[in-house]
Length: 154
Image 1 (tube, one colour):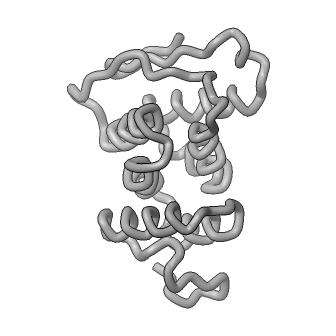
Image 2: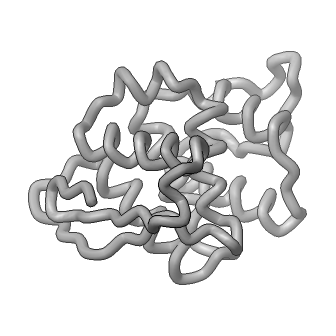
Image 3: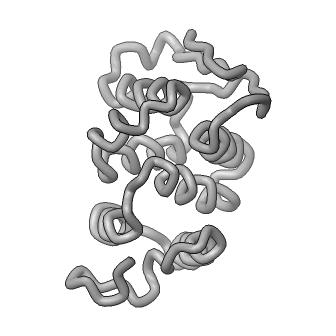
């Protein structure tokens, strides 16, 4: 079990051997340590893949056991909010904390848009919610007007 800044996460025994689960746990550790440099080294694609895998219905490798907002960084706030929203409802509410977390990590809007548009499949509802969430944090829409050739960039 790993504890930092009032949060604790638990890895279930069934997930301890999985490399994918270990990379998610590493991301949680780095975020709680405030190690943005190492998160950036992982790359937007790997970070997004780790975070989005939390949305899988069969995901049970980590559980947010407790938490407090006292003294936490914005990085931790966004990550915690994302995890709480995912645990509550896998369809709504998670888009904005996800994008805010990536923004806090220093990933450019262009980089995030490119990864989300090219590496993942999205339903129409998810695309609309993601664009609304992007506008809410002051970023360009993720999907609306996206071109892999740079139109509508940052």
